[in-house]
Amino acid sequence: MEGLSKSVADLIVYEHPSQSKDVDKAILRELSSLLFKYSQAFDGVVLAYSVEPQDKCARILSGVHPYFGVRLQANMLIFSPKPNMLLEGKVVKLTRESIHCIVLGFSSAIVTDENIRNELKYKSKHGEGVYVSRYHKRHVIKVGAVIRFVVKSLDEEILHISGSLIPANTGSVHWLDKYYADAGTDSNKKARRQTEEEVEMQEQVTEGGETLPLVNDHEVKRSKKRRRAEDQ
Image (tube, rainbow, N blue to C red):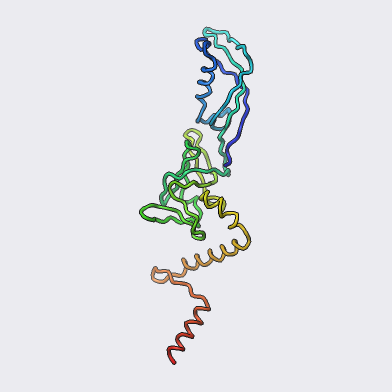
């Protein structure tokens, strides 16, 4: 999944003299306050960290309350989603209008109907809503499934992501990892185009609101022969 990166930062943590008895604990408490919040300094959300003090001596600042600063180096895991990146999330809610999921267990994401490609159609099965591909029956998105989507935008204040399932390399991670590479071969692309044309024709050929079945030339010839045999 994209959007994850490691960062090494040289920091100075300022502590009150009352924390001098247990500086290590005070530093960890200060850094823990950065977790799962968007930080402009790191241009992302801090997910994890490890620290190494650079100096054994602290620098005391002058003032009414003489804080002391501790130099340290922090290794951080940063989550920084940007537009057009591919992310993965677990589906927690699914309706005809949208798909809701959770990314990395803390950030919410939504894919609205205008950002879901026409291939994926909403259906109700056994009282539960699912999205099913019109061209690949095994490509199903339901509650509990993990989906791969493209980032459109991020609300930094509430860590809410807006996503898209328009690109062909998005959808159910289970199906993509198992079948997408094969679906991209020339033979399968040709078969998919034929399937798409048939589906579109089925949707366009209607009479009285009901879909008419398509009949090929071979079936027409067989039916004519059958009629002649009956007449004789």
